[in-house]
Amino acid sequence: MLDDNAPNPDRRLLWVMAAVALAFQVIPNVLGGYGYFIDELYYIACAQRLDWGYVDHPPLAPFLLRVQMSLFGDSIASIRFVPALVGAVTVYLSGWLAAFFGGGRWAQALAGVSVMLAPVCLIFFDIFSMNCLEPLFWTVSLTVLLIMVRKNDPRLWLVFGAVAGVGLLNKHTMVLVGFASLVGLALSPARRLLLSRWLVLGGAIACVLFLPNLLWQLDQGWPSLEFYRNATLQKNVPSPPLKVLLNQFLFMNPVLFPVWSAGLIFLFSRDERNRVAGFTYIILLGILVVSQSSRPDRIASLYPVLLAAGAVWWESFFARYASPLRWAFVVAVVAGGLAFAPLFQPWLPPATLARYAAFVGVDTQIERGEGKRAELPQWLADRFGWEELVAQVAEIYRDLTPEEQTQALIVAPSYGHAGAIELMGEPLGLPPVLSEHNTYHSWGKELAGRLAEGPVIFIGSDRSDLERMFSDVREVALYECDYCMNWRNNMPIYVARQSKLSASEFEEAWESFKHYE
Image 1 (spheres, rainbow, N blue to C red):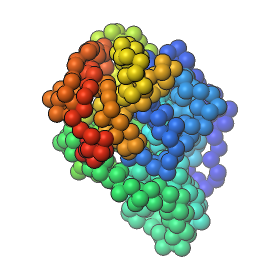
Image 2 (cartoon, rainbow, N blue to C red):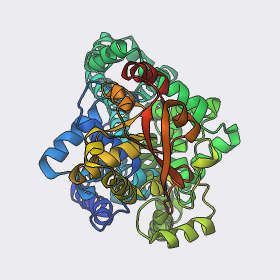
Image 3 (tube, helix red, strand yellow):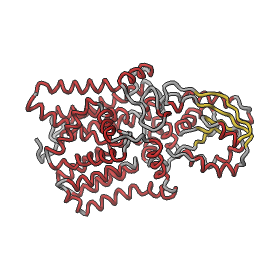
Image 4 (cartoon, helix red, strand yellow):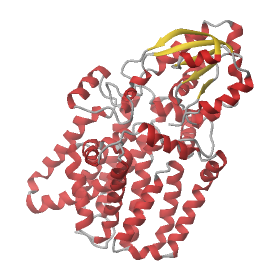
């Protein structure tokens, strides 16, 4: 099935699949998309404050968003075009990989459709964040590695290093796929490629590209390490090994299990030169099991390669044993993918989706805490309530006297609340907003002293904490949010006046307010 000839992809088919994938992601967001996702509001704020790093991510995604917004604005449809475009490219590449593995048109079509309908792709390519770029970087890096092994050309370490370096500027987890790839290569018959000087040069390229973020981390006191530690201890729900494995089966849609599991078999059985990709997946899955991570998406960016390999395995199987059934198999994959797609895309009215999620039995909690529950899956629930919040805060602000309005500040409990107020509150003339959450904490240092001037509008704060800092604390509203995550619902909103602390005391105390999660 495999030979040393160049792959023979059906480029017309791949372009059509990429176009369909693009439309599949764009159309729901043109029609509304429920609203901004909590992380998108934060990334917009980051894009307006470009830097070489942020507490919880490197600089590439905010930079790309800044370019996108400067050209097309910050509407939902606009900022989600880049994720949709990246998804289309990933679908094209998955079909190309099927051809690389020796597959014909049927395998290329199955690979593209499988990636298009994979739940992780429906989520990642529907929301702007660094996650939307990760599947492409991981797939490209493994593709380069497979080509290197196939051609026995160690000079491709330069390309691998460049991809890894840019990938690190997008998300630090790129280091995991780099590590797993090197170990996988050591376990494969192509381990001789590790002895090449080109590997050192490729590593140097990756380090040079990543150096600006590394220097930023050093200058800021390694905030991302603190963020990752807190996220591991405070957010992730510890999961036993069997549940970690089951989550991979469920999160990737049970209908796709026959495809990607066959891909893993293919990588280890058909051609020993493909084993490096199989070992890379096994190693990263092992890390996920050992760490007891409740986040099945942590290694989801590897699945385009497995789905492409699985499509070739099934093409060979049907050619030998059951050719008339091969299109029925594709129909089953498409039907299963579409049946689960409303759980990952904003297709249905929220009330209908809530009933559907309950019927299917989706566990909406992937992070620790009772507040991390909702009627909808978190990737959809965190798109609700932002406009209502801003309107409510604006009404409270307008009730202040003109003199108070000139001195007022807003303190928000998370980067999502702060980002929403910045983005949607600017046309309403709302005052500056502070938050102790992640990079917003750093941005708030210059304004912390102004908390002593008041009044300050606090969203979701603890009243007893406020009364230790202010003599006059009044609850003026209750923010309610249908369908959003529990922790965002029923938040009291206070107006605090008559500070008990001086400006310098607030500046000193601001550091203790830091919340990295």
